[in-house]
Structures are given as C-alpha cells and as structure tokens.
Image 1 (cartoon, one colour):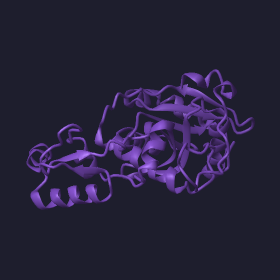
Image 2 (image 1 turned 90 degrees about the vertical axis):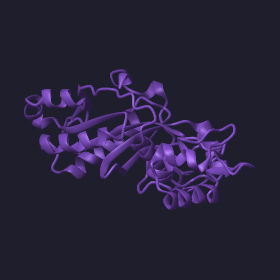
Image 3 (image 1 turned 90 degrees about the horizontal axis):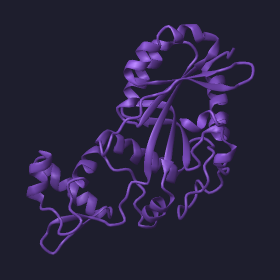
Length: 259
C-alpha cells in the first residue's frame, strides 16, 4: 500500500523509464494538457522532424489561434489574409497581429503577392500524446481529470493503488464508456499491470491535441522540470543533452508492448 500520491508517482516515474514499450517516447512530468495539469505525459517524438524544426530555431509553442491560422496556409502559392479571415473567423486586427508574429518568429513567410505560406521546416515533432493521471483511491476525481485530458490526447490512463482494486473494479463501466484506461500498481512489488485498455482516438489535426503537442515540444527543448528518461533529440541542444538513455524495445514488458 502506498502512503501518498507522491510515493506512488515516484514508482510510476521509474516504471515509465524502464517499462514503457515505445523507444521513441519521452516522459514529461506535471505537463499542462488543455486547462489542466497531467501527472505524466508520454510523447512519441519523431527525431528527424525534431532535428529539422530545432535547426530552424522554431522552439517555442504555437498558440491555439496560431495553430488555427497555420492549418489554413497553402505551402505552394500561399494563402491571402482575406482567405484566412474567411476560414478562421478572426477579425482583421487580431489576424494581422497573429500573421505578423508568425512571420517575425519564422513560422511563416510572405510571398511576392503578399500571401502567407508556412516555413517548410515547420513540422510538429510530437506525433502522439498519452496522459497518465495518478490517484491512490479517488476514482471519481481521477475519471473527471482523465476525461478532460482525453480531449487533448490520443489516449488517457488512470493509475491507482491496487489496494483499492475493488473500488475501481466497481466503476469499470464508467471508464469504459469514456475510453479511459486503468493501471493498477502493487504497493509491495511495485509492479504495474493493465486493468482496462483505453480507447485509441483518431484525433487527426484537432487544435487541442496539436496545442498539447506544441507545449510538450517546447518543454522538451527548454528542459523538463525533473529528470526524465529521454535520450537527447537529434540536433536539439541542451538542456536535455544529459538525460539518461531510453531502454530499447526488447527491455520492455511483453504485456505492455500492446499499450
């Protein structure tokens, strides 16, 4: 039995370092997801895309409005401000400020016809976002928070102390309905096992998920608040250069390989 959530979270952090099955995953603790903070975010990062974006100096996270505008831009001939305004519904002054900032920061460029097109080096290196909420026994609060996270992620988990297995077993139907996965942690062995698999979401280019991916990217480049198990991203300088190497897929649990 775990005495408090911080003790459980420490076990979860170690488990993620050793057992998470994706070798391209980076673990970020206490990460903003939407309007809330997830205990852990596990993000799959495309190393080539990360190197390309970092080399272009595009390290900051785009805002939701900027993401919305960038999604409207054509890479060939560009997109006029009037066309962007029609598609986004943004008023003239606000749109001009956004477009000006995107150009100043290098995310977009102006064509000879004064249209806007994206910088070809702008890519989203974070390709998949999984959230994990840690709770000892409060299934209701855990479900509420994981449900909020699910809007901004590809999959969401709740991890609980298996001492309270019965409490969570009785409400499996609530978690199954909302597509939230359940993980149980044993207080003695510190083993973590799957109790219920989450629904895998096809989120496409949903702005909320892209915003989470942008925030995670910025956090990885500027350095997580605590030591995480990532390898250094190719072409991305410190502060993440001294982080420990990720385990290979062969080191991961066979049971977890289906997560």
